[in-house]
Length: 462
Image (tube, rainbow, N blue to C red; front, side):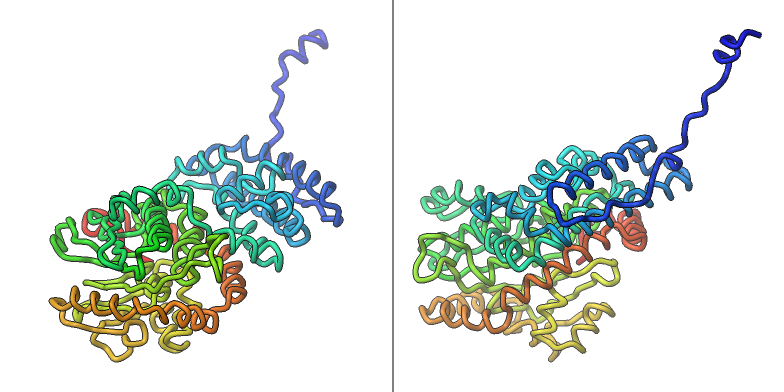
């Protein structure tokens, strides 16, 4: 046999992906250009390895092990880079702090300016096509980014401040709301009645469970209520349900939509992070209007009216308002620990309101608080006969419309929750929540919930 013929008959063994991967991440030098270049090259090699693997759902055990290792090594490299350069990266992305970007704008700008630092829009679009269990967890990389940016003593306050600005959607609708006094925003109905803006949650088929759209609609409604000069007080209340179990009854909120979480439709940035640093923060601090005087933040008092129950994110919302009216048959709960995730800012705010011991019972052990219990008075102000809810809300609005309320609530909020305290918590929350979203126990729980209860009670959770 001729040498050439033997060569033609040989089978060339492809080099296994694991033999093409070096797990040694680059060591930052302190030079932003050099370190950014090294990170880009390192993550590009890692992405080539991942691209050679099947999608997560089709990987064998060895392929899953390799993917886990490659993803973890990239995250170590990104975290090391950001620990050294987060502030300078943020300066680049915001034009030297001259631009105010939303969370999604910022994280995608980072992907363009510093390739490999955060997931691209294309990568995130591909992840959104997958169920939660079948994603590679690229939102963890977004959590790493925001963890370090929020920790920065310069970038963190600038970002927190930027997120208090009204959304583009709210600015575009302000004229219409001013003329008509009412808007249908999808899952929220906004109405100006006298001196109050009534924000009614109308995601009735899902018991007002929270999803990406509800977060966007609520922030829009909060912005509009704060920007309208005729509004003195905001009111948050659940609408009447179309769900068979609660047909015709008002329900405040059933928490995160766990079916959506199972199906991969809950966004870390546009839901879990945005709700905390967007409309919930605006309920406390107000909305930023640069030409407002004497302060650039326009604040107003808020009333929450709880019919039936406030679960998870619904209960969290109560911690950000000034007065809570609850029906005597209502209850409150934070089942996040049972589901495996972190209940937003509840670990910060409930401890301030109710102390550490009761907070541990509610958050860690899943204790349900009934409105009639004495301990419930630590999270609500009035407990009334369900037939008296409308009158009690109207009376609360009349009290809080007093001109002296706004400056006094401003000083209370400064004392109770300084912005830097919230920022430090938010930085840790960004990383912890992103990690929890992709933890095996959370994936297992939401899978079982979706299989067993999607027909019985959609939504419901923390």
